[in-house]
Image (cartoon, rainbow, N blue to C red; front, side, top):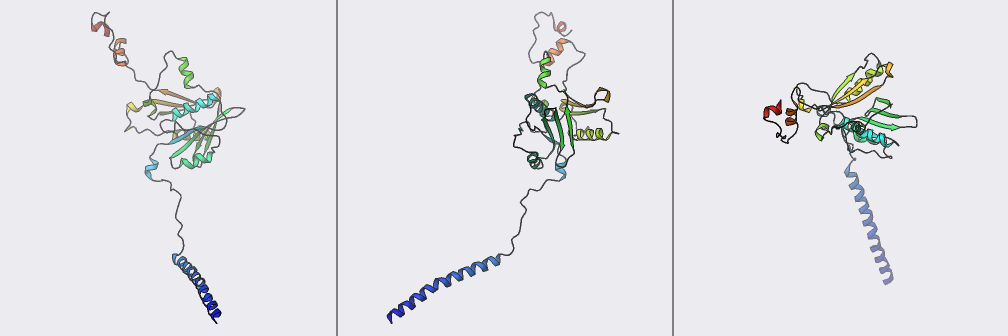
Length: 265
């Protein structure tokens, strides 16, 4: 009898944890049911389509794609100067980067144009891409001159300061035929590449550069010619002595002159 009682007690004590486990599982299922349906929230960043975003100046990425030579890399740096200040001067594309990578970050940075320099065995090319849905213009680079090449031909090359690249250039489009579809599209794309000029609020001191895009006639081989000029203010119809006074901060030597009038004459 004692053995039977002990066995019965053991059976009673062993059945209790099972009941607790079942009760705890049932409570967990009831707690899960009480939570209701899961609400899916947006995790993607919304693109800013407000009027404030449309008033921003057009921005562009300038980079090379594929294997290019050292002169073409220098051309990319010169194109970044042309597109300044609305471009990333320190942008460097790596081999593993795809066009999709630039498109993904272009929306958040308000970048609307890509200037891509590439090279093949036949020739070099410049692609002007409107992000994200196009169109795309492809130009074959026939010839080019770098800023370093022009500076080497001058006796006293002009060194542009940082202030020159902090202002938007003045755009000049020349001899684009609007009746031809390809030239009309090219003129529209190139015009939208630079910010428009507001004559009412334009300051003369901000006009430091000119970018000229000239459509060459068919007799000269056709194509678009790109040139950049720096605007430099200089006094006119004055003597050499006055130019020296207004140009530098040093006081000129007047030892060989009898009076100030002789120096200014």
